[in-house]
Image 1 (cartoon, rainbow, N blue to C red):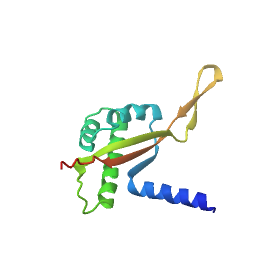
Image 2: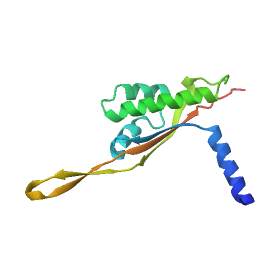
Image 3: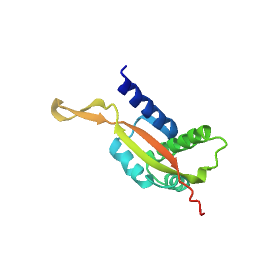
Length: 136
């Protein structure tokens, strides 16, 4: 590995080490439906986001709530003895990407067959702390 490549890899590793995230892979909800729920909580404080997801009637909200709880747990593991608390957390970014699509056949009239696409997605959620302002 060349020097430039190694330095950029170390820089990315350091950036990733500072951030807290959780990943949900192969969720059996279409990405379009998941993005509707994600848009409700993007940029919100963690406590507000948990309340929104708890009372949302959509199926994707339950999956996203569980992922957010996992991200909070990851943050607690990484920041033991920190001056920040869970109330200082907010959702920095959320990415919803398309995963594998299962292709199925639906029988139709006169011997035809229509294709049914069962879509799934990957969700990545990043948390960050709200910086406390110091008054001097």
